[in-house]
Length: 239
Ligand SMILES: Nc1ncnc2c1ncn2[C@@H]1O[C@H](COP(=O)(O)OP(=O)(O)OP(=O)(O)O)[C@@H](O)[C@H]1O
Ligand SMILES: [Mg+2]
Image (cartoon, rainbow, N blue to C red; front, side, top):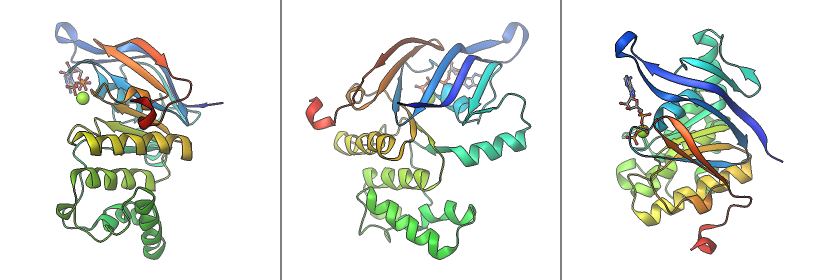
């Protein structure tokens, strides 16, 4: 049922060269499917952010092959890689990265206008998406007037307002209290299902696996365990 959206084959990442070379990732084989939320869990320094950066075309692998949306990324020039990234990848950051002087709506709208939407259309789409994430009435609030969970949901709105089907979230709940963290992870899991996005989220929190379709354990740069959950449960029935 699910379709592969990103694929890594024999991917490694090494830093430095010669005797000082350190290989921090791989080899990793991984397929990420649309309609699924995959969690990546592992100790600090195990390579989670490196893996996410390679998937999101922010970092080139040292070896191996990567394809995204059916296109082989390996030999493409940087300009073409950047175009693929803009078209297909959305990032949700741990610390939201909202622009402090812009309202919630304006924070979402910026990327849409940059992508070529008219001001009116961008405004309408921003409000629609904020509403779908439970932020109706907060559209015109500044980040400092929002709670942590609300700010993170604006960050998610900003990411998913764009067409990028691969949504990468690096510890999206780390800065949140547990209740808002739960709302954010539920939102991401719903998005995978509802909008057929391929979502990959790094987390340390043992409460989220029941929400995911798939959980990967990573240690010393390698995927050491994979657990697939045929039907991810809503959080309330998982506790
Ligand atoms: N630019 C770099 N140059 C050299 N080593 C690096 C570089 N970036 C990351 N590393 C090393 O690669 C390893 C994996 O880093 P990574 O950021 O992927 O870990 P992580 O699993 O995300 O950890 P955390 O949970 O602490 O965020 C670490 O040992 C790190 O020190
Ligand atoms: Mg990290």
